[in-house]
Image (tube, rainbow over all chains, first blue to last red; front, top):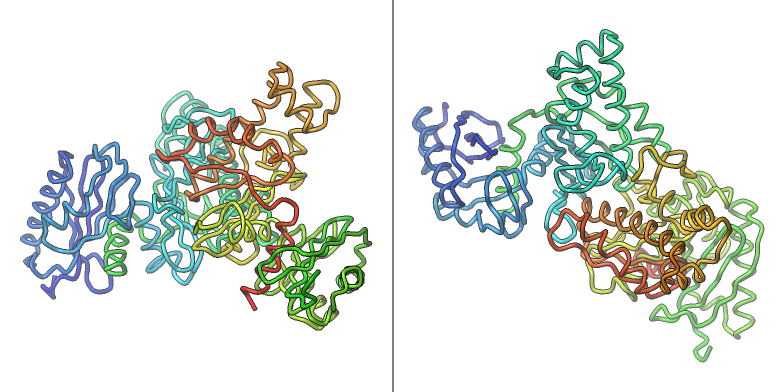
Length: 304
Length: 304
């Protein structure tokens, strides 16, 4: 790091790892470090974050004192305005004033966001959704995370409790979702759902890149799995379009690694099932895994 | 009409009838008249509107000259900002600058809204959604019409092309919808869907109030139909809640005539399938059939 004056420190807290990044004034991640942690309550997690950021500063010769703010994103329901984690099952946090714990620990102002929302904000400011006022990021990983930008700002839900659009139901008689409903978009369109579909059709587990490569090359069994998945995902996106009429949808997360093959596969289903004559364009997210961390910092600066 | 100075004239244009109302300064409909018409193009429809409003003014001794503005709502996709009907199949209007035709014909400023949006705005200002900032009206009639208020204002969709939330899919393998998709919320939850469900289960058509009365009184066959319908509708509302997290949902249209019996029937399904711990309350709309007409006038005044 040439300039030792740090603008922001971002954290992306997962179920087993914390990633920490130092960001410059343009939200570029100039240094990054990740390590395993034990989620031992809000103060315990904040202490792990402090330790990790000290190690990162030491590694690159920066001073933690120079950090102006902290941005944190987590997997779970967040009341962003009040800095409260409503439910984050794999962090063991429920109705937790986690932002306050972070601010106390670092003695700096902090912002707290859901990870899908954070990634969406980053894509809207720096990535695939740049220049849009009303758009969505659909992150396709273990689950489905959806962030929505409306009027150029992150939409936190009508009661400020966040967006859980992965739990819009698309198959009322379908397989159970982790949330307890049947046939949620997450249950049919997550990377987990694709893996399950593939394993059930092929009789064995298959790595996603292998599945994609074989489907591309016309392997009939893999192509059938991929086509069924694309049918499901295209239908899910069309439902989002019919309710929100977004200008653009970006796809992120593991499955989005299939790139233009994914877009080309879902496109016909999106077009056929959109109510609007001009279906919303669908593209691949640009910022990858660092989007959440950067988005949390952007939110910190924009909301402070 | 005591005071002959009219504030606004509202029109609710259906497939076969136009309703026209004179509204006072508090958006109360003081006089109303409805008649059949032939939808003969944008200028033809505007001419029918003028004729009807003249008849109404004559009937109640008001002067059309005193009307300050016109509010119009129609069944179809509307670009409200630009006053354009995108598609209104039963009016035969497509990409029609209908607002301009109305303004030309009346020589007064006009506003144009989709009918579900208009009813939603009226409920938000005068009815069941009064006092909410982020809420929805779900009108359950021949189809499903959904209006959304966000930040206290009508949400026109991210591209301004309107909201078509009746065409969110809830049964990917289900029966065809009028829009061409399978298993849309409209295909499972409209009054038409309920009537079809009842006819198929009972072997003959049944009037909605009779079905409701019999289900209330514990008639087993009618109760089964009603319970299945409530299951579908409750699931649909839960999906809206999971994506938008509204403060309140009001139900309007024919099926909402079942009142608290409807609310009590859908409530358990809404609660069970909402991701949020505190499910959004669901209530019955207050303004009835005149909501669209009043909402169009409110929109006219608020946007002029």
